[in-house]
Length: 347
Ligand SMILES: *Cc1c(COP(=O)(O)O)cnc(C)c1O
Image (cartoon, rainbow, N blue to C red; front, side, top):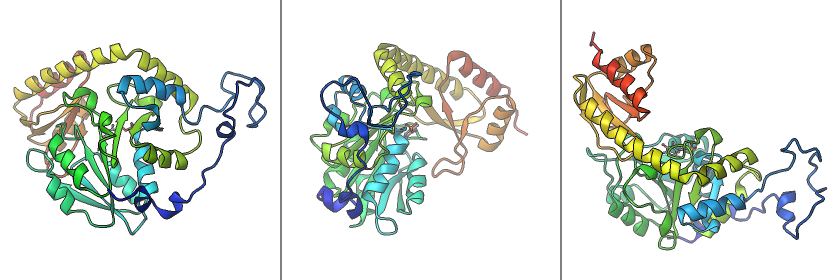
């Protein structure tokens, strides 16, 4: 790996971050706070929240087996993705490499930040080749994006291929594990000591049933976490989100149970889909959704909309011609989808 200074944009490396009132006060227990121009009237949200979310990180640390110093929390994983561009990619000079097809936000963030985005097509089983990814890099490639289980395809990517990318790439490898709770594969989050160039993304938006609170996690070396902390908005995670995340973390046994149910519901949905005349192929998934190739994705998507059922049309995405992405719901939701598709009659 190149040194972190070589990888970081010069302006970010030399940046002195904004020092908030709550950053500067880190002393003995105090009871009179006249430092932040807050209101003294507690309604009850008058105080700025902890800028580094220490209590929440300690709790996450216990469940994810990652030290608090190796955790960055963002306003969704999307914030961490955007900050990676802002920290490491010089607009119009640097580039990033990503698997294709994959999560659409990497490309959007690249375009917002005016950074070249190089797509490397997965094979016909939606697997990645480390050699192909590495061949697409050059000296200005700062980041490689890998997503496993991948979205929209649902499959786990090969751990040995990901390890090969981590071992051989000189820049930073982002492994997006938004759906890892549904997978049988181990997370990369506990392997930060092995790979100083690894950033693992996870989120509260999927298995943790908390998309509305906007909370994403990045796990990485303390040096990379330091850079993200330096450039984030001082109070990027509001107190309501911090409290609700704590509440969900206390209920982690319940989440484990939902994950089990959703995995068995996915199998049920896949088996039911296999019987439908309009379904041509179901791709193996390790997530809470699956991709299915159908006779006519646009027509079936519109038909389902007319029945009040929304799935995701992935037609026009690389390798996904005539594919619909279906999120696993409750049994009654899944039954409504299957019944609607049983009644579907092509024009
Ligand atoms: C849903 C999803 C996310 C989550 O983003 P948030 O901003 O945390 O809601 C991240 N990556 C992938 C691949 C996703 O599918």
